[in-house]
Image (cartoon, rainbow, N blue to C red; front, top):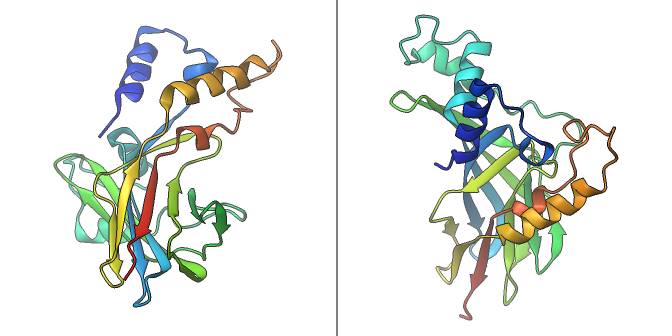
Length: 224
């Protein structure tokens, strides 16, 4: 888990230090697991996404939902049942922060389904999973299928968990994680913020910089 920025912001808040616009985002940290589902023709048919929320946000969610009222850090079966689907009530137009493309051409995803939620008593973290079906099967062939998980407005920062998965298929396809150039992303963020006027609220109108920080899963297949 990578929560260095969150810890720094919490320390700054405790010390009464005000963070500038460049460090005001993100607010939520999520570790994302990506699984690409293939059919028997090595066509991508769905992606399964897992979100593990940072401990601070997990605590906020359980508190806001009135879970764990005794504060022992454990959820009873009935409380865990109430947690199921809590983050699946998406607003119209929300894309789920999951973006799939094939050689640069965006592929449409269906609504979330087959979702679930678990709670790690030892770490105090919520993990949820959901499936998104592609609108049509996508033959990978010699192309590269890319799954990027990011929030365009960078309110949420996603970090990919290692070892992305490929399930189904002939066994000829593999997934690898790819990391962005963070220095270039920081420069793009600073350049975007430099365009703001002195009276503009960068926090309320943060630039759509999330894609620059996006980690990706890239799926390729060898010839049969």
